[in-house]
Image (cartoon, rainbow, N blue to C red; front, side, top):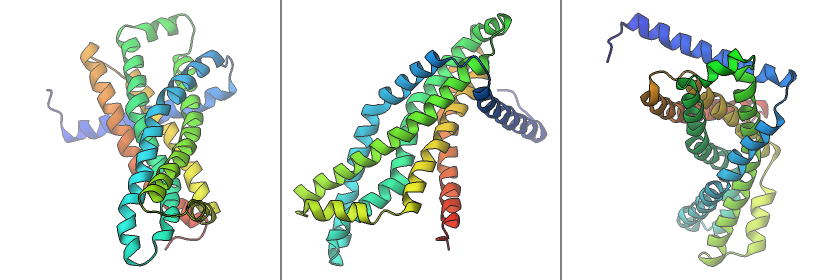
Length: 261
């Protein structure tokens, strides 16, 4: 492995951030330019949305179920077992639904984008597209970004609903709570801030997932080994950025609604 000076490492990282930013902005600016590549968008939407649905449903259901199960012991000590629905709904809608869904989609789709585009890069298919007058960013990146953002929005809603259902199953079967009480607590304690937080996060996270995966795929070097490195780096980078951004997005929305400390 080649040894680099600290200055070269800093320059390399700054250049990578700049290249990623340019790619991300170009993927958005392509929305207003023709051709639209609607067929590519529909293919990506099917792969990302329908393909990720089973793992999202499974993750959401058992996340809600374990939330109800874990919180029941603590709530019972204070005689507040009836608040299980409120706890599950707030936790799923505000935080766990968007974040866990994003991490699942990252592991499945960001890695797929990086490996697919990386393979095209090392086999010079990207260069061939440019030679034929096709913009690779317009053809390959923009449909993936739009499809991921839209599908993440709906996948998170499904994950939240399934998570609430998982919490209801545990509350009804194992804790003996009344179904009407559970669902009324889950619904009535959701406010505009909670819903906004739960719907804004997946849009931002979806954009990060797609652009990170495409960036590492298009910057792949070193043959088949480089494809493997790009795939790993895409998953790690997207996951870390999602977890970091989650804090700042939460803080910004809390400030917007005037509920932050």
